[in-house]
Length: 367
Ligand SMILES: Cc1ncc(COP(=O)(O)O)c(C=O)c1O
Image (cartoon, rainbow, N blue to C red):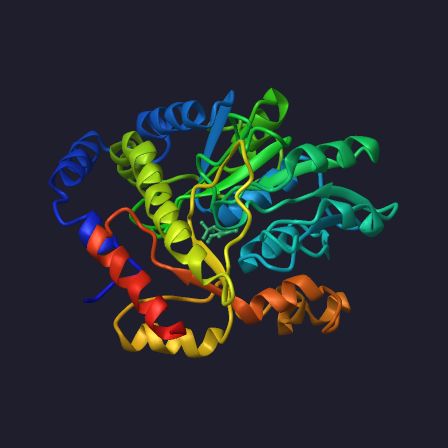
């Protein structure tokens, strides 16, 4: 039985409604910004439970432009984690700031709040927690530290649409948050797209300028900006899919619950990250820590189960980060995780039989 990691062929097996909506857009010639983007922003803000959403061209730009809008630039330090997709750190560097890493929690994949204060210097301006894999970071603790030291918080929520802490969605805790609409994200479009959410009107107004060359109107430029608009065409795709996001999320939560329950019997070999009460984990990735990881990965792949590793090299040990001055051993928890983490398929197009097959194959491996 083939258990694929990507589900795009299944998701778009019947693309007619989306193609029809795109045809309507083509006939209106409303290709940049305009109604489709406005509608998508309104609906996205509703999903997150925030005041404003601003569509941009990627999750990376959502983070980069959030930092720019917050006035962050050269000489500033931003605290984040070494176990994230490169774009978190790329966005900080693109804004001209310096990423400063802090290790992650043993029982989860998000920043360890107890270690944040020791990384704060007079140059620290912001904390960028990552809601990695769809696990909400420890926002109450992070906000308390930020307040104590007068730091901004910009959330990397690219993997975490719909994740919650005590009923409050991630993206609503910081000054701003970036989301990704990349094809493999829980809410996806047909290419690149991103969204910034904020409830701060001044930040929202600045973002509206920054994403569109700083243009106040056709002839007046307020500030130098960028070309980072969410394409109207991608907004049309997003508008066709956003109504399904709760169903998609609930299906992922269901498969994750079945994995959690079945794999709990293998606790000698498998560590399931903690699932805290009152949290909604949205499982962009279903990640475990496992023994004999590379052998298990090969065993699953040979049996047509597309398990993956997110990611095998922590960012402080990437060649790109060499000038930041870190070395092996600096972040022992994140480093150990890169040797044991494994991602299982958890998407909304799996069948119960496929999930069962993944479980049985893992059980067979350890037996
Ligand atoms: C944690 C994280 N941050 C940032 C990004 C960047 O998003 P995008 O690929 O839309 O630029 C991604 C996704 O790729 C991500 O997973």
